[in-house]
Length: 157
Image (cartoon, rainbow, N blue to C red; front, side, top):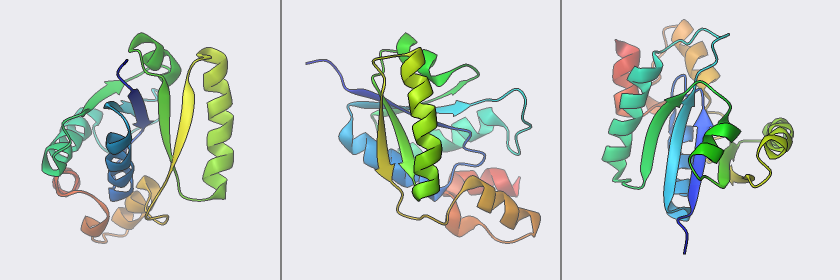
């Protein structure tokens, strides 16, 4: 039987406990999960992608997830999937707005890579998002309840 490989991609700027919950669920469903930090050259990141990659790797070790790998990619995720033999694209959903947004992306991905199937996993903490964490940081609020410890270390600098 072929290995069931999935992709979970995002800016992860920063990686939150909401992302962490989706990765845990995906790791239980698939043989291997690639967590890929997508780099949009047109957007300025709040946190360095390579540092975030290392923090995610530390979080995976803390969680005992040995079937998850982390990478940084600056191209189309559908092409990453094709190049790496990945057939499932995992997306986390917090609400109906997320679903509408993700469905458009899923349709485009299928045009680029027809064999790519999008799998939606329900988020456990619908209020947690990277933008919410950045907003709280802008007001000098403690975000440690919303991010893994290794990510908190990056945030604290």
